[in-house]
Image (cartoon, rainbow, N blue to C red; front, side):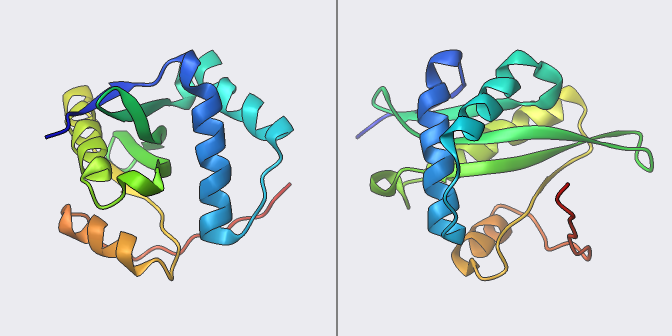
Amino acid sequence: MSTLTIRRAERGDIADIAAWNAAMAWETEEKRLDMKVLMPGVTAVFDEPRRGFYMVAERDGQAVGCLLVTYEWSDWRNGDFWWIQSVYVAPEARRGGVFRALYADVAQRASASGAVGLRLYVETENRRAQRTYQELGMSECHYLMYEQMI
């Protein structure tokens, strides 16, 4: 039986994280990300811890997935929500408990830090991911997301 471990990402993971982000953008939105923007974007998280942190899943010592945690202050709740973003699991590791292990680790860390909750967003058509999040105890919010690129 293979061993799955979760660890905080290190600078040596930046290239893998950037490649996984590019793969995720293509798989979910058929969007090509510019590596000249993406690499410094990933690196910026390591340069400024206030931005968040990445977690990496390894199976038998081989990195197989990651996610990014960022923070949102809630004045209503006087605490931080931890946002789970940039989730990626390598195709060969999917349906093998990788995301569930990453999620469990993040949930434990969030609880220990005093965070008030976990949030994430998901493509409206990604029913498989939505089922997974519901099975983990998450529920659909009543908020819609809007954005304006500047």
